[in-house]
Image (cartoon, rainbow, N blue to C red; front, top):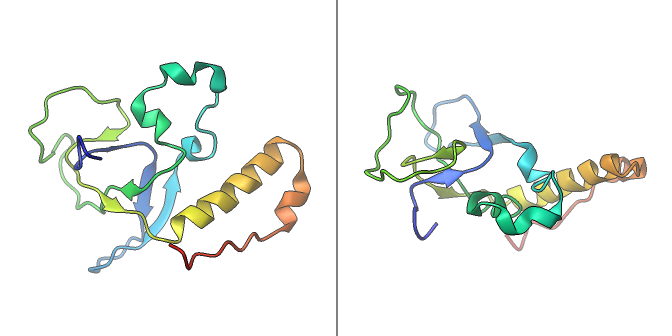
Length: 130
């Protein structure tokens, strides 16, 4: 965030399809949030920086108006991985995102590990601290 505060990489965020002053996050589409190292941890030393930040997202690209492909507001000419939005801005994730992501990860791991009883729990994490 310090080097490129207007550019984010990672999963795709989707907002409620309504026009208002306060966009509401609908969902984030990306397996990397659930399983950031699908090939295992033995190669994590070779992972790019954007992959290392996937486990703990803090910001999201703001809702955008439609525009032609390739339209950006940055003068940066360097290279980014293809999943990066360059020059589209950044805003903090809503406070309820981290607890919801943690619950989703618990369900994902339960299914992957064949511990299906995890699906019987709601995991109501306290969001007051956020």
